[in-house]
Image 1 (cartoon, rainbow, N blue to C red):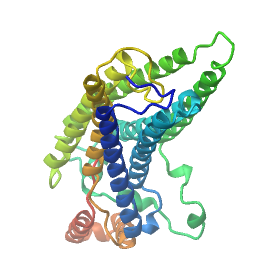
Image 2 (cartoon, rainbow, N blue to C red):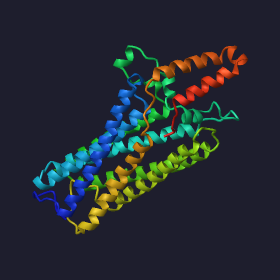
Image 3 (cartoon, one colour):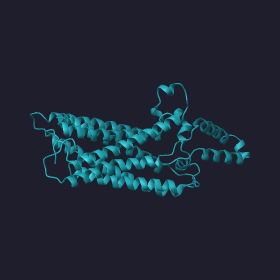
Length: 354
C-alpha cells in the first residue's frame, strides 16, 4: 500500500478506482445542483422548499466527496504534509456530515407523518393524504412580500423536528472541528495520538449512521403501513418509494459503517503501514463511497425527480379561495363546487412523503 508521505502515488488499480469514484460523485453532485437550478427557475417565488433543501444537501455532500477524492490523489502524488495532518481529516469529515444531515432531515419528515393524528375516519383531511396529493401544500403558508427576497428562510415556518436537525448538524460541525484541532495538536510532542483521535471519530460516525439507518427502517415501516390506509390516486407508487428508500438506506448505511468500523479505508488522507491487497482495498473503497454515499444519494434524487407546478401563485389563490368557501354557507348549499374545486387543486399538485 502506497503512503501519502514520500510523494508516492497510488498503485494503478487504486488510482483508477479513486478516479472512477470521484467521477461518480461529481456526476451525482452535478445532477443534484442542476435539478436544484431547474426547480428554482420553475418556482422562484416559493423560496426554500423541502425539495430544494434536499437537493442542496445531496449536491453539496457529493461535491465535497468529489473534491476530497481529487485532492487525495494530488496529495498522494505530491506528498502534501498538511494533507496527512488535520486538513485531510476536515475534507474527509465535512461531506459526511452533510450526507448525514440530508437523511436526518428525511427522518424528521417521516416522524412528522407517522405521528400525525388520524381523527377522521375517511382520512380526507389527514396530513398524509395532503402529502400524497399536494406536492406544493407548503405553498399555502407562503405570503409573497418584499421582505422575503432579503430573508428567504423564516424560522417560524420550520418545524420543531427540523430545527432539531439544524442544531444537530451544527453540533456535528463543532465536534468535527474539535477533533481536527486535537489531531493537529497531537502532531507535536505530547501524549495525544492523532491516529487514535481519527479512529475514535470514525467509530462515532459509524455508530451514528447505523442508528440513523435503524430509525429510518422503523419509521419507514410505520409510514408504509400508515399509507396503506390512505385513499389516494396512486398510493402504491408512493408506498414503493418509501419502501425502496428505506431498504436502500439501511443496506447502504450498514455496509459503509462496517467498513468504517473494521478498516482504515475512510482514512484515505493518511494510509497506515499495514499490508493490504490492492484488490481488497479497491472493493472496500467502492463499498464505502459508491454504496455508502453515491447510491443512496442517487435514489433520493430519483424519488424527488418530479418538478413542482410552474404556477404556484395560482395554486395559492385557489387554496385561499377554497378555505374561504369552506367556511361559508355556499359550501353547504353547493357541494358540487366544493368537490370540483378540491379535485382541481389535487390535480394541480401532487406530493410525496419523501
